[in-house]
Image (cartoon, rainbow, N blue to C red; front, side, top):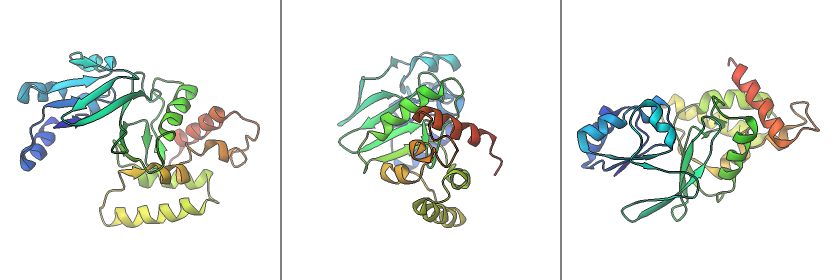
Length: 229
């Protein structure tokens, strides 16, 4: 069994033990402590083998296996390919299971949102989002945080005439009121409602009709960074 990122080693072990699973591997998406902070504890407790980008070394030991775009990782009968989705951080990767049509995208893409650009450039992040967008529309995406409700509140400020967004926002409110999760999410739905993926379609709405696609993305990201809703 692999843990995709390690925000809390104790909780991961509680969940694994309750299900009778043995954590043999850790696959990190990026180096932030809420994603790789439990690596050392899991290695100490169960001897987990850590796979991830080289930047993981910034908060502890280097990964047992360093991966980058184009690499293949395996767990039992499952195979995933690694894609570079840097922008939120440098050396941020996603794990794509093509046969199962699912991907673990870390903080590169959220439900109706995307990660802040702590280290990368808008151009870099836009390129990364295009890689995710190129996956099959029926792919299931596993992001790392439950930010959907706040993301939806921002999304309607830049895409308020989008009926799919308004419908989804209302559904998210219903789910969260019932304390139910909104992730994972489908890529098809993200393409229809995520303002960061829809940046080329929102140039008029953000008063940048002549902007390049990445410039429109950068403006939407700037507005989200300043959003207080």
